[in-house]
Image 1: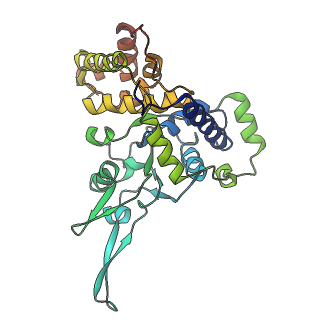
Image 2: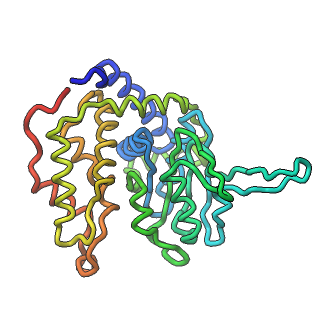
Image 3: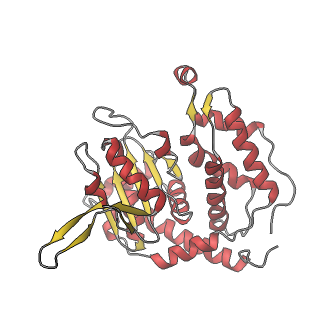
Length: 326
């Protein structure tokens, strides 16, 4: 075991803090602890999250609740067909008093950015978001401006209404570390939501639990979770099988495999462990990989679905049985 590996005591602290965050967000998004855990894992793995679901399921509420739980800045951008790239990134304006050009930051400059209905924006505006998601900076008039750290984009899209929308290209989908859906709450949670119908936005009552500096420290700590070579070989075999699947035109790339490893480290620490298990890989393969599939058109027409293909691959590829702990 390397001396830089997370200690059991650090893993216990990480899990305790993670659970407090889940509980805090859960006050605004009732009955959705699993989805909340995925979203927070995405944040601590320094990635971006895509929420795709029907209207009224709480996508925006969850994004706001996560932002409210972190003592940093957060902005919401409502994407529309007429939204310009400069409306996202900001603009350079000439100041007559000083005789200089001043950069005015756009709403993308925040710790957590909610990009609502991202598929309603034009491809040009979507591509402007692409650079900042990947690089953590924007380029305006040839000058680069960093957005700071931590930085997370939580984007939502509605799969039902397709009129006036622009489908996200595969290259941009691949920039999202995870894609998941909130879904409708269970019966008991729905009744509780209805009983508090006078409260329009539960996230406004939340108090921040963690600073942006602590988020950065937790992310750095998660990098030190031990991952055995057997687990890495397991991830590699799974990725290879997605490329060999007859229904797939493009399978999971090396970037996708790296993304899964990053997420499993956070997932393991969130469960109080300083080492990754094969079960962590199985838990996260769907939200991290399903949106990275590009299906063969004939297979897609025949009803093939990435989730089902991944489920089959996870069943077929044997997980390592030997000891994988630190």
